[in-house]
Length: 386
Image (cartoon, rainbow, N blue to C red; front, side, top):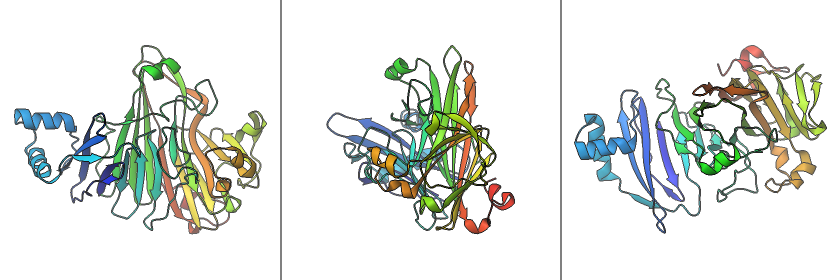
């Protein structure tokens, strides 16, 4: 397993280990006019043990206490890795994940957004707009995988407000998961600040666990109500999938379901086709969907399998040519090589009482289309991610 973190154009050494877990903790100190100083201490342990860097550093340095393995690792790495001045002004902080099979992922701390997912052959599986090749904007970039909370789309007055457009932090209380040697992960957290409370006066904690494994990308969101009153929200994980040609793609698993057509003022219809194909703009919210949906790319002979829990709805969108030209952050021809698929809770908002927590799950897999022939084979494709 290897994990490395970069700010700006500076790259840190890659960390390799045979242990069950490598946890890379950072402590950032921002000084006016000096950019960001990044202190890195990889801690290698053979047990599932998270050590939050700031507390651990203070304990081992000032009190001389703490785990002896961690203490030895601290001094060994402090001798070999110095504070690195890295340019923060021209880029956004990001986390790189990789696993032994050769796949990789890239996550921006801005928005908690996944902006790259490559398979073992180095092929990019996520679409990013051709008009946003460099992450210099403080706005959310179009593409990758984004988190929409506390509302999706224009279903309310917030309209894509934070945390999608805000900086997240590394989470020091991550989701407890069993350690594995073939996955790498990062845990992020967003808490509202005073300006956010003006838009939506609710106190909450939004966490996102992102895990990379062979052929699979897992996202586990959690929302905790830390307010003194109940609140309701809608939620979605929105995936921009990279495809060969939108006219050569079909979506299976949503047939016979009801959907809301956003092109017709959210009028309700029932899907009559045996699969969704594209010959024009599509913008639909499918309701009460199954846990698995497949996107079959005939030209690339690749199938994306979307498995989800706690997110009963599915959004399917492609702007086609006319709308693509009207969007300022999308290239005129980008619609041909993208499909927007969301795991969502839209029709029925989620309600949390004080101190209650909601958890969802999305597993995105890319498999060979040889798994399916004609209509979706539920045994070979729909259960591949379980």
